[in-house]
Amino acid sequence: DAGVTQSPTHLIKTRGQHVTLRCSPISGHKSVSWYQQVLGQGPQFIFQYYEKEERGRGNFPDRFSARQFPNYSSELNVNALLLGDSALYLCASSLLPLHSYEQYFGPGTRLTVT
Amino acid sequence: AQSVTQLDSHVSVSEGTPVLLRCNYSSSYSPSLFWYVQHPNKGLQLLLKYTSAATLVKGINGFEAEFKKSETSFHLTKPSAHMSDAAEYFCVVRRAEADRDDKIIFGKGTRLHILP
Image 1: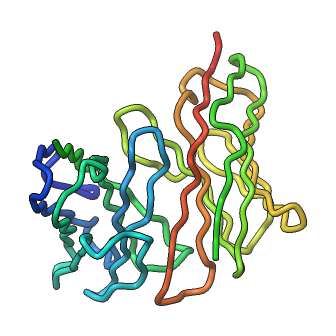
Image 2 (image 1 turned 180 degrees about the vertical axis):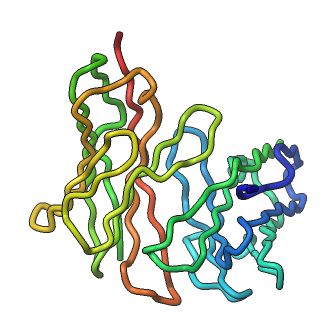
């Protein structure tokens, strides 16, 4: 069975540009979460979505937005990119957005902002 | 509010000796606690989780952790380290009850080095 997939794997953007990252959850999983992992740090929670609704949001500016589609895949959008947005962006899926359900992580998208 | 503190950024142990990775948490709600491992250039993998059942939790690869409410701790241990255990370990806290304002908080990580 396929795990969580993310695209693209790597991306280079210029300051001020916009970026869209994509995530496909494990088949049957209805909840998707997004994290930002800066080099040398732990992942920082950005969003959690379930049934196309936002279920949780971390301390990120409004430049960050996300959505979930009817097939449970998800997009993370970042506007007006800053150098500090350079990071590994991780997507995780779970059956339901409950603590008792394990989150499975994808390999991530490495974003470099120059 | 929730927070998690991993007390050591780096831990070095010799192969075959015990491992102790320390984690303290703070939570306004009943917490669920997790340990994840991240090997170089690999994805995050769940080692074990505490979700208000038994306080001593056994995970994969011989790891276990004990939830101590009085000490607000959830330390990760393994009796005998193996070279393949070298990786980054993250302690994670999450609100136990379902909530529309769910937040999942990762610690900053502990790099485990295994000496031959």
